[in-house]
Image (cartoon, rainbow, N blue to C red; front, side, top):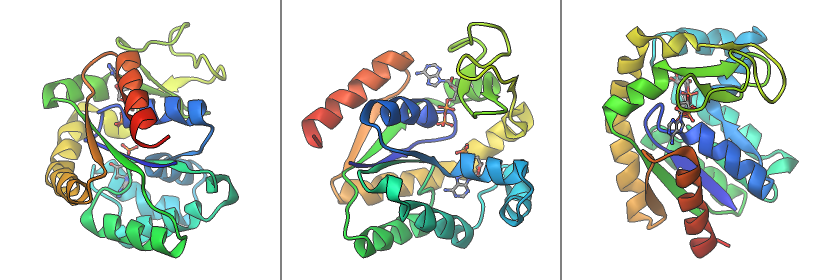
Length: 217
Ligand code: ADP
Ligand code: AMP
């Protein structure tokens, strides 16, 4: 099962992708996570990506496309994958199609998580992530059992630099038109489903699972 999560920053893509990856036992591939790990490890990719991410811009398509192409060739993707935060531009969507053709596979579903802008800002500014395993929390909507400590691995929870208020609005604006273009692109291919992602986390995942069971399984 080959899935894509599409949506503005803060719409809950990572949260839902994490839940589905566990349920269906397929890898959750987040380009944002790949870049953050590269930055943490100070790799050449990390050095390249950091300036874009810190300023709320997108990393150039040729860099991002290359990384995803390589990742999708790994053996753990043979039973399927969940892409989160990729594609984010039409160029990336076309590169992904080409990539799928070469692998003789196809995308089954593109899940568009729709959330209004005022809610996105609340979600992004309250988001905390584990500095060790990357798990996502929210200070109000999805708090850990012990304040500032990851339930899963005991790591410290931190705020992403690009979740500070000054970068959040910029990121939403950078992604708006591009997300609309992708909605059109995948609607034409008849693989897009729109989910009202303003409901609680469990309600959203139940709805997504229902659609997957109906359309893909
Ligand atoms: P994205 O990957 O789309 O940027 P995340 O999954 O990281 O978004 O979610 C953004 C923030 O909103 C996180 O702090 C997460 O805990 C919280 N969140 C995710 N889904 C919901 C929801 N349905 N209701 C309330 N908060 C949510
Ligand atoms: P995310 O974790 O999805 O919110 O992504 C964090 C940041 O990583 C984004 O603001 C971009 O700077 C960069 N990024 C993640 N995915 C992509 C992508 N598909 N294309 C370009 N840049 C990306």
